Length: 88
Image (cartoon, rainbow, N blue to C red):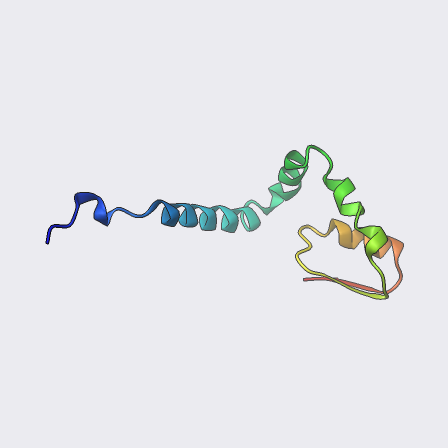
């Protein structure tokens, strides 16, 4: 049985998966300092407004924020609420 010459090539979805894994690893580690720049750019300058828009919906004295990024919402919560505010 003959195997086509291009059968040993890496499928495009595998290349994309490797690239995304590489990109996000470096974005959230070595290039974490760019987080605010990227967020502001992709939101066309509305990032802080979007973060603050969650405030009216947060209730309680103990708040757990999951996936808090650089912690901008956490800071706003600590400034405006009494109680425990934790990010994970």
